[in-house]
Length: 96
Image 1 (cartoon, rainbow, N blue to C red):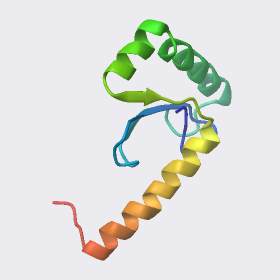
Image 2: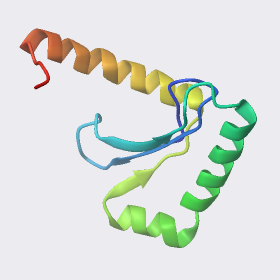
Image 3: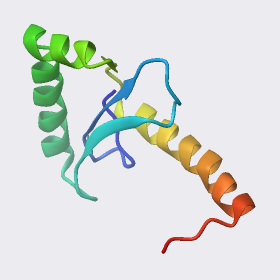
Image 4: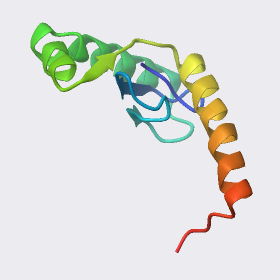
């Protein structure tokens, strides 16, 4: 999944199959990254992650690669923050 919290930030994410949908990993750039840089980063990471030897290693490791847009990534991350924010508030969870 290629996503970002901001449309101008490139991101890459992958998640484990058959697990909690909140488990994912990804790459994010700094806030206000130039759109051209974010686009180039996304293009190159997508190209590399889709190389057969890389893709096979990810799949053999139990993960799935899904290409998404920055907007889709932002939407999914905001939804996850809503879900887990509610859990944290309801359970009174605090950092140490």
